[in-house]
Every structure is written in C-alpha cells, then in structure tokens.
Length: 438
Image (cartoon, rainbow, N blue to C red; front, side, top):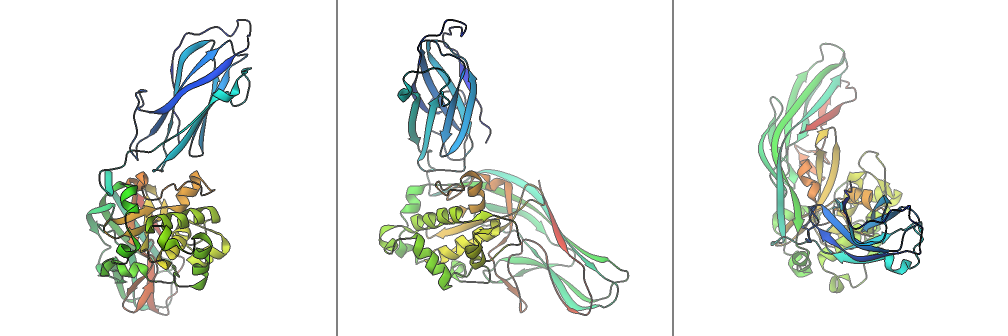
C-alpha cells in the first residue's frame, strides 16, 4: 500500500501570526478518482479517499491527518494551515477487500494544534465498491511466460532400474488460460486421479550415473493468460445449501479427504463447531459459512515457513505457511459440504512460490481465497481480505490443482515442485525445483 496525497489550496494565514484558539473541522469525506472527482470505485481499483476540512483560528503548529480504511492506516504529517475553508487532501489505498468497507479520517490525532473542539475532528463512514454485473468476473488479464526446472543429482555407483520424474502441468481453469505448454524432453502428459489434474511424467529406465553428481534436468515451459477476479457478493449469498449439494460429478473429488486435507477427521469437525453456530445451515448461506471459517483461521494461525503441512498439523500447531493455511481452510470447507482445492504455483519473479485456494459454489464456479495473504493486511481476521475477490491473481500461475495425484500405483500430493519415483540401488542427492514467471 503506497498512499498518495494531493492537496488543494485554500486561503492560508501564516503560522507566524499570533496564536488564537482554533477549531479543525471535517466537513466531508468520500471516495473519489485520483483527480478528486467523486467516484465509487470498483473492486480491483485503487481506493482514493478524500477529506475536506476547515480551520477557525490559528493552529499552534503543523498537524497531521490520519486516514484509515478497514484497519489500514496512512498518516499525512506536516500539514500547515491557517484559518480558512475548503482545504482538502486525498490518500490512496490498494486493498484486496470488497463488500462494505469502513473508513475514518481524523484531523490532528496527536492533539498538537491547540484545537478546542476535537469532537468534529473525526469523520466516519463506509463505502461499498461497485460490484460486477455478473456473479463472477475475470478482468485485467495479463499474459506471462514461465518455466520450471527440476534437478536430480545422482551419486556414482548403483543404478535406476525403472523410474520417472513428475512435474506440474498448468491447465485452463477458473482465472487461468493456457496458451501453450511443453514438458521436459521425452515426457508425456498424464491425467492423475481422482481430480483429473494432469502432470508431466518423464520416464527413466536402466540408468547408471557415469560420474559422481550427475544430474537429471527436466524443464517445462508455458505461456499463460491469468486474470484478476471479482465477484458480486449478493449472487454468492444466493447459493443455498440445497443447490450446493448438486455440484457436478467432476467437482465431487474436491469434497473428499486426502493426506493433506483430512476433512472427515473428528478434530476438524470439532473445530468447525467452535466457529459456526449449531444451526448454521438455516442461518448462514454456504458463502457466509465459508467466510466465517476463513476469518477464524486467519485469526487462529501465524505464518511460518516449514514444508507444506496438512490440515490437522496446522490446526494443532496454529502456524504454517501458505499451503498449510489453504489446506486447513479446504478441510473445514469440505467438512460442511463446500468443495475446495489448493492452487500450487508461483508469483511473477524467480522462485516466488505460493499456494492459494478456491471454493466452489454451484451455478457460479470457483471462488478465490488466500488466508496467508489476508494475514499480511489483518492478522486479527476482522476483515476478509483476499476472500471472494482477488486482484493479484493476474500475477500468479497455478501449475497444480488439488492435493492428491495418483498415477501408475504411485501417489504424490501437490505437484508444485518436481517429484522423483524410482526403483533400483542408485543414491540421489538433494533435488530441487526452480521457477520463473515474467
């Protein structure tokens, strides 16, 4: 968030004049365009907040103005004015938050000016970004080229009788459209069960390292168009539990438990009961129930970067990385009948790994959520940042969907990074994956 301040001149009185009792008064505050024209923003745009105030008398010294939007703050310092009307200023906020958003503006929050009537220093209000015309809208598409390389080092001695490497294959789905995708040399695209998410599989048979630290190097390349996402909350709230129970067969695997998302475990059910009321299916819509669980998880856990943890471990430790948070959200959502999945991939840049999630509303589609990113704005979980809409998704590519990939009798969880499966007596060193997106 990088606030921008613009000032509009009013008649000024030099602060060198003799001090008199003063009164700073907010006369209005509202959302505007960057040029100061009144405007209600759309989600995904910069939110500009304008304040208009007047001054009676002469302040003792310069003062500050505090802008707050949903807990985010910007303080404009060194404001020097004398008596006058029509003073105004603008602060900008880039927030991943839609729905009704509270704001406030406070003149001289540090009480330096000598103001004698502080009650009129504060203006509080709300604004609701203009929703899209449809329930789900993809906007601001950006085309990126990307690559991923998996490297497996082998020690001299021993051999691989049979084996293969696995790498994720981006697909066209929800916010992402694949323009082209090529796998490693000699690889083939294989559909995994139970979700149908594809992977690149590169076979190796009868391999013997010729020298110590000899490497297998597999690289994928792709070109994707990814879009920001915004939703019309009233439409999301209109989806009933009865309708949600009618999801198509291809979505059903995202209601099932797996090694990372233990949605049927009693500990998950017990935690859900502490968050949702007993009669939640008659008092909350699926969207509202998901949001309530999401905000509780954001508040419950702290960010830490071990390997991706399963939902139960994250619930117990109350900490985890982006994938851990997503797994816990998905477990809770699935436990009450809302399909959910992880999107494993990376941001623009080099090795900018990330995992976010989506939940499915019947008749609408996949709705984004990102608990670890939400925590960067509001660790208290008071505001549902990155829930339902996400303008940052046009800077992210998903190379793997879901947490369960089964092929040829073998099983991996996410295919965010490369996996190795082999038989034989060869010994491999530490292998890893690098990524680029630009």
